[in-house]
Amino acid sequence: MAAKSAAAMRKNSHRSDHFFQKLMKHPKLPFAFALLFADSILVTLIIAYVPYTKIDWDAYMSQVTGFLEGERDYSNLKGDTGPLVYPAGFLYIYSAIQYVTGGQVYPAQILFGFLYMLDLAIVVFIYLKTDVVPWWALSLLSLSKRVHSIFVLRLFNDCLATTLLHAALISIIYQKWHLGLVIFSGAVSIKMNVLLYAPPLLLLMVKAMDIVGVISALAGAALVQIVIGLPFVLSHPASYISKAFDLGRVFIHFWSVNFKFVPEEIFVSKAFALSLLVAHLSLLLIFAHYRWCRHEGGLFAVVHSKIIQLKLRVARRDPSPTNRVLQTDHIVTTMFVGNFIGIICARSLHYQFYSWFQLN
Image (cartoon, rainbow, N blue to C red; front, top):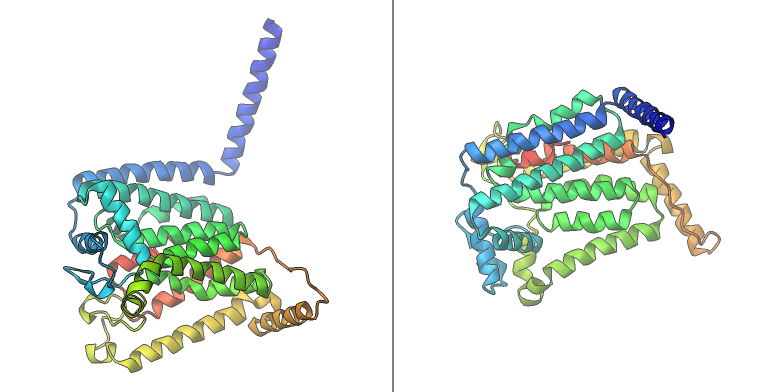
């Protein structure tokens, strides 16, 4: 018995030594856990000792209260910062938050503290899956004073939209395109900035799936928007669509971060907006052709191959779907770079918009 016990102890000791040797050779995982633990302490201290900054919370609660009282006309859902300009998913999410927190700031901060940690964990996981940065670079994900403030001191809806977007990206990494599009659409329903990811996402879908798969995934995303907005579309469709999906909205020049150096008369002009749109589309086309589709021979080669596949499918010569597995680092790089292109071409960025890319 003693000999067997000693042998078992030696075997367990050997396994432990082997485990720690693997950790030493691959330190990213233990460092990631240490990072999450340290950041959770930091978030706790921020909530406990740093004063809350009142910006949009009261407006959110006013808009949610109007919705819960039965108002379905978007033009009548207002707060102290103005009318509601987000799709209906925002109302559902913040109604749940109001129910859980009673509309009080402190419990909401705790809730958003957990949300921050969830978002950070998701992004760390994405970076671990790509395996393209050294272990110490993961610490950069926790060094933003601004992002901590956006989550737990200001309680912006950007935080929820960004977290859902990152969750969608995990589904896409695992080639679960239809599920990823549903989650992506849910993120859009909270704040439309997520649409900046739409062009690179569409390109990845075209590369990974046949036309039927792309159309069915997009249809699933559209269905999410229809279901979420249905109570408002049925009662006041024009008000909902014009307010929740106002792509031409001009932000106040004073609050702009990226183009504050531009004179106000130019900033608010349609010519400036059009020039930024042209720059955005041009950069997307350049990156798509020369970077994201480089191995396929360029963007036009990808489009041409899909047209041929569609013709063969219509002719029933190749009726089976043709899916392609994309590399994780290619998916993540394409999505993050595409989003960043949209950000630098956006007419106005407020400080809370840093959450769109600070964890990228």
